[in-house]
Amino acid sequence: MRRLFPVTDLTAADDRGEWSLDALADAYAYPETDGAWLRANMVSTLDGAAQHDGRSQPISCDSDMRIFGTLRGLADVVIAGAETVRLEGYRPARAREAFAARREAAGQGPAPAVAVVSGSLDLDFSLPLFVSPLVPTLVLTGAGAPPDRIETARKAGAEVVIAGEGSRVDPARAVRELADRGHRRLLTEGGPRLLGQFVAADVLDEMCLTLAPVLTAGDAQRIAGGPAVAVPERFALASLLEEAGFLFSRYRQIRQ
Picture (cartoon, helix red, strand yellow):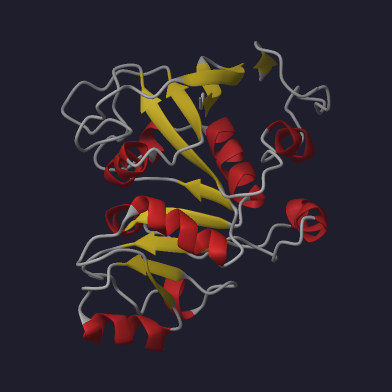
């Protein structure tokens, strides 16, 4: 990767010219803030597709996955929508030795928790994500979620967090509920509908976007879906990295 925009010094490359995980972790470190900081990590093709055949992996690359792992290694919690959890086959986040000392120094556990957003709780609670995670999985849902599904989730070992009225999760309340539980470094990996909800609620602080040098055509979703915001939210470029035609950008929202 080459540095194209001023960022934290990234000279710690190996013999192949790749940045070390420590260098990437320094570049993507969360800012010092009193409250929660919500960043998103998504990948898009040149023509705006966030997926191919329903999954993001076909438009990704090894360096994208390296950054993906780094962002997870820095987060307190990884937030994903139920549909993304099903399509991408989510498993529990694992502890990684490369981030152990950094996480311990920051007062974090060995691995980030995964938080699944679901109003209906139409989830398979027998999966490892719920029954055998290193850190208990959280399920964010609304007060009107089916009581029997809430009970099933809790019996599986998940922590159920009520973050909305009726059957819907309120994005701003979800951020607050997670922060109240000590999760301030938040990372959402989508899908597009969930990211759109965070954008509409004006709670997204940072966007990490990989632009893949491919075209797919078709009718795949964009990285964010749902109703348009009344006034476009403006972000400022924080860093821009490149490798093999892939661009790895990081934007932070400009708040007045």
